Length: 506
Image (cartoon, rainbow, N blue to C red; front, side, top):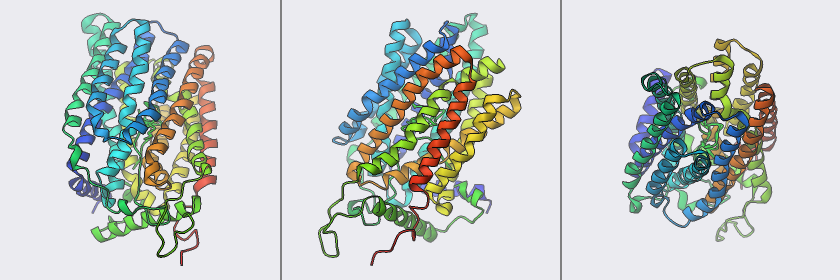
């Protein structure tokens, strides 16, 4: 069978096994992402049309990240104590109200609305990982997280194309470019509000513990425990930004969700596994994380045969190793990702619909990469996929820096977007698999704070740099930070999470 058809078949089979709650969450998230991508595409351009300089735009973008950072930890701790689905419908309406404020309020109100949009959209990012853990089984979990990340890209196509086309069609008809931006931004408000409908249909009592999760202890074979997006944040490199996330994007997705790829079967060139082989691959994944987890934080004393197992507390050094590369990547993303639409506008003088088309093409490429991620990771290892995909993305950032031929720049943009975001769900799964379930909410919150904090500072600084000297300095700094982040990730994790790289237990 054709590798692409095998991939579609694998995800179709997995989708049929998703719980109704998981499907409703995916539907609500899709509407939120359409709204987010539409607003992210147009908001900078709207501010530029309204007379804001790049430094002022950077200040507003950092305000959004500040809102996310302020809410991430409290929301995560709160969600750890209640069913996250209780907060989702309210979060959708509040996010919609914040987007409306960005479009309609005067300058002081715009800043408050941007802060609120960052805060309220964080609810979806911190809810996704724990929600999926409670509403999925072992066999389908990695595909569920990967599909969630991939949908963030695919729905981004809709948001980006709709936003760019709506503004370019409305401006001539209304004879007022600023009013056209405001009406187009209000379309994002409508999508965010509509997300409350599927979220409200989630059945709080129907959640099931993941198969095998009740027995999850460090030193035992753990479930694959992926995280959300987002901040597979923007660009889902950007925070949102997952969580991103345009998408996590290098988005904060906190995403923690940057974004990924079983078109991996295409890249790896092997047949789609049968049901038995998929089960074996799932067990292999659990074994891989178990080996890595034992190396990072061994079982507590007294966990020998016949003893009552006690979860060992992960050492602080593990959290440092999981967070430091993401901090540097967040700094790099904040320097450039929020300004890519302005880059295409100012350097190549493109229309909003053309910019939306380029961004949408990047999201399609990232979607393909995300769908392929699990298949590639099964063959080369999760840390290895993260390391190589990010390392290969760095040269393409430099093409954006110095090349002024639009076709080459567009291709470099697509390649960078795909490579930098393709491994995010896989990275999230690997990281969460190294800590016990009771620490999943904490790690999610720390990742979001880590990402949005670094992104917030970088976006503020970059706006001033771009206003004074153009895009070159920010792009070069981004490439350097991504390179250092990738090197540290390789040093911390590559070669340390494979079965057989550690002594087997007796």
